[in-house]
Amino acid sequence: MPRSLLIVALACAACTPLFASQTRAAGNGFDLTRPEIREFVERIAHRDDFESRQVYSLLAQAEPQPKILEAISRPAEKTVPWWQYRARFLTEERIREGVQFWTTHRELLERVARERGVAAEYLVAIVGVETSYGRVTGRYRVLDALATLAFDYPPRATFFSGELEQFLLLVREESIDPLSALGSYAGAMGAPQFMPSSYRRYAVDGNADRRRDLWTQWEDVAASVANYFREHGWEPAGPVLAECAFEPDAPFVADPRRLELDQTVESLRGAGVRCDTVLPGNTPAMLIPAEQREGPAYRIGFRNFQVITRYNRSVRYAMAVHDLAQALRERLPQAAP
Image 1 (cartoon, rainbow, N blue to C red):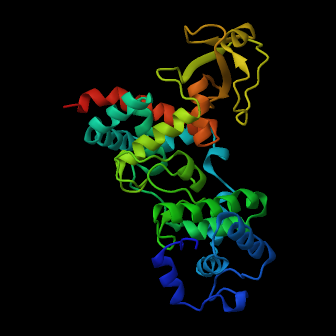
Image 2 (image 1 turned 180 degrees about the horizontal axis):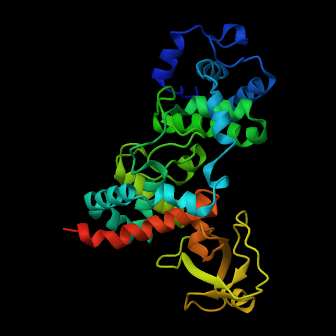
Image 3 (image 1 turned 120 degrees about the vertical axis):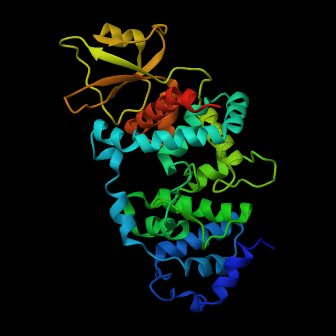
């Protein structure tokens, strides 16, 4: 017999009109007769050993969220220049709170950094950028967010239906209550904002309690972020970013959508890009636009920078994480015991 999604989820489902002859959700929920919903349920029931009735019962309690469809159409990292984007994250408050967080969890962070090879400032910066150090982890039910995007957002329906499936598997594996778990408008969860597929693949049990809890257990959070970075190729003690400038008439045009290491330090120098680094000429690199209020500006990203873009596929996001990490590292000695 397949395991239930969660006893509490099924108990709640029993308190509302059950999927009446598998036709329609109650209230303002989704119309469960829609072909794409029926196909989703039958597909995962067959592939993942769920009972169709259980999945229908749970989806009957999912509520469409129009505000999510508005939010996903205008993500900040794609609509504002770098200098404005940076100002949102490199605030005095965020830096101060980050230093406090680092000081409070210093032993844990340094242990994880030592064991997994990811510098503590980047572990702190990720949760600082994502959720203000775990303080703002999202206000949407993950079930609602993923169902809305899976069934009502055609441009990425395939991706989000996959994440909805991964969420249901995660619920079964980690005993998460699917009716109360909160996250972002895109369905990202916990202090590090892992999507369900990333949660299942990269989250680790950092405190040996046989659970992976990214909402309340900082041991799990720190170890999971570090594991995510290492699994994506993070190089311990490797470079992340370097400042650069163009010589007159340099032919390069930096594209913020390009996330590949398609240049080297030497090829950039040969094309008139002056790089503030002593790295070998064959070091893989990418040219990054970093617009300032005064006009165009550029930086050079290396392998570890590319890894940060795997967390969120935006060079502006990755620069914000890097710059916050450096600001925290510079400020920490003042607050260290």
